[in-house]
Every structure is written in C-alpha cells, then in structure tokens.
Length: 281
Image 1: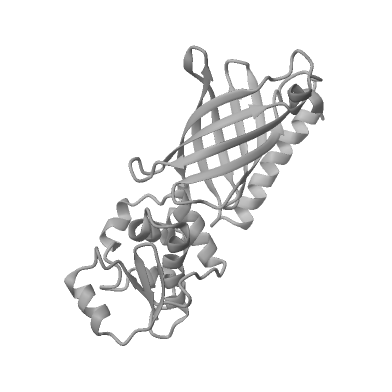
Image 2: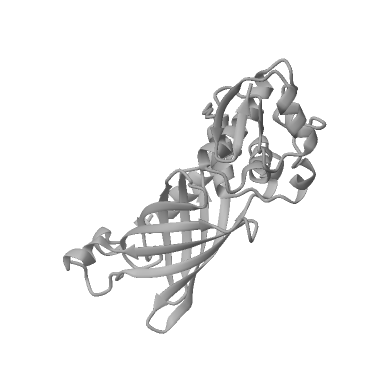
C-alpha cells in the first residue's frame, strides 16, 4: 500500500477509535478556506476539522485550485473568551504519485475567533501554512510555498446533541457567554458540585432542569454552545473547579429582584468572584 494510502487509512482509524471510545468529546467543523492573494480573497479549499478532544484534532481538506488532498494533525490551546490559537503538522498532495517528507510536509498556525455571539455555531480563522523546506531554500520547485488564508467554519454535532457535555456547554453559553474562561469553567463546576451534593439531583440533566434554578433554561433549546463553553464544560467534568466548591452563583447586575433577595438573605459563604459572577456555597 502506498504511503499516502496508509496515512489516509490511519486518519480514518484514529477518528473511528476516538469517536467510539470518547463520543462525548468529539465534534466537527466544516469550513471554507479563502486564500489571501494580491487580488484579494479567493475561495480555494473545503475542509473538515475533526476534534477528538478539546485540544487535539485532525483535519482533512481538498484544495481544488491545486487538486490537493491534505491531512493535518491539530493542537488547539485552551480557549480564551473568544480567541484561540492553534497549530498543525501534516502532509499535502496525498493523492500525488509520490509522498516526500521534504516536499509535502506542512506546518500551520492560526488564530480562530468565535462568532457564536453573533452567528451561533460559526467561527473564523486566520491561518498560515508552509513547507519548512521553503524557509531554508531546500524545497523542490513543486513543493508548497507559504499560504495565508481566511476561513469560515461551522461546528456541528449530529447525534451528540443530547449528551451531558453538550447540555452543560449550552448552559455555560447561556449563563456565562462573554465571561472570562475561568468563569465559564466555574459555572460548569457549580452544576457538577450540585450533582455531588445531597441537596440537589444527582445527574447533570436533572440539576440543570431543576425548577427555578437557572433563569436561562427557557433559552437552552435554541442555544448553540460556543467553543470556549465546550472546553469549559470538559474542564469542569475533568474536575477543575475555579468556583472553589460553590453551589450557587449570580450576576448582581442581571439578577432578578427575587434572585437579589435570595442572595441577600440566604446564609451563604462567598467563595470567589470571577468576572461579573459571584459564587457561593
């Protein structure tokens, strides 16, 4: 079997293994890449980013201008409020007659902006791709030169939409969009702290939908979780707790009169204040 075929087969096998073993962590992005040239933006490629965890993923793409099928392993840094950096290592021209590490190796680096506040599910990314050999002048004439591009991506989940992780991310989006990343994790941690507490139901779904607990619940059916909320949900489910054991939180500027009265009269202990939220236990 040709090297290209082995790489493609390995990519598919890894995707299947992680999807079966960790279905709660997998999500996908379909995107359109536009190359930035002297003539402006030119649509150039279609891609799918297959995120196996919150930080590690695979990309497959097809550049119709170059008739180039490529695959890239991706690493994404922990999400900020709305901007995230990522890096990649892969190969171009997988359908070509011969795969050369020197000429087909690709590095990429990008900056992705979450557009979920304006266009739920969408993000945009500015990315540069290059063959390391071009930096030293040792690349063959047929190797890729550096490319700078802008992409528009849409995240989708298919059958994963009812998963606990997804539901928790929806709540984090509805309650804490625009808050610092640490504050988003803290909101997720409050839900999980309630699951562990005998004062509340013992599942994520029951805690979130418990009557009169989260004012954003009516918005959840139409809420599309942001990428940072998905990461925050995963971090919270892995045990991170910036809330310091809190069971309650509120935003004094947005809370209802009933909520303000509750926090003013309840015998609760403040644990931390992150962004616009104050956390209590």
